[in-house]
Image (cartoon, rainbow, N blue to C red):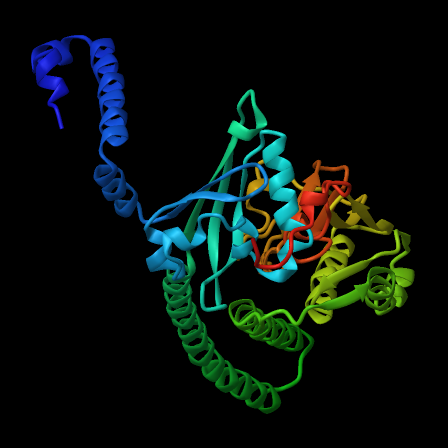
Length: 404
């Protein structure tokens, strides 16, 4: 290849004038294109050096060009793919919505990016990251789609192995700490009971004893919470009727709310959630208890559940003391608490449960005027592109499975 830098300027010129370097870079790119046009071997070397599979097709998905990497990654010879349609690479479930949606977006000059199961020549499939970029021309027959496919399963396996090792380390640390603390606690509790029984009963002594026992119980409760936080079980996802689930959780608090003059109001839009029922109940219980703790001498709690587009939002609102603005960024951090003498592991657990379901947790609050805690869940697990057709009236949006 020609040495375009030496032909056009020396290094001093490049250092002195940035715009000149940019101009040279553009001319070098043009020289590279010229070389590729005149040398098929160079074009093959470049495509082979790119680790992703690159496919070029028309707007109907018929493949015009396939890079050599298709052989290593998917088992297809490039010539074997030419003339077939892109639907050959999609699993049958994704031919209903995802594949026609990608073509529809391309016709609208929109790019698709996302994780997609890609079918190999032997019928197996692997999770890949796919980018489909349209290049529209004045004449539709001259328009092209460029699809780039990157296999991410190996990367995922390495990440899972690393996360699993890290998780196991956390479990061992938490288990070791719990063991080291629990054993002395049992001894301290036993000795405290013996000392108390051997001493003359007095009102002041009884008060000290009760304080000591209460603190021991709080430490033991914290140990259990830390262990649960670290060992959070994998969600067993099922369809849960949100009204029924909220009602079951709330029932266990109604008597205490009545005793404390707390009014409760429910506004539940009926829908289902794809969640682990027990984990959802636990997170909602934490938010209800948190709201009750913020109320002094009575108050009001509202529980709302609404469907907003593809999201399902559960809100627990109270008119209690609220949270100071400087504390809001840390409210979901483990061991942070706005209440003296309390350890804030519970709200961190709510956040973790929501995230394990593909959602999130958050709070809106103003000091002295109450708080709104919310959990935001997806309506279903998975990409909406796979469930809803963006266009229903085009014949080409319904390809035959794995054919030309």
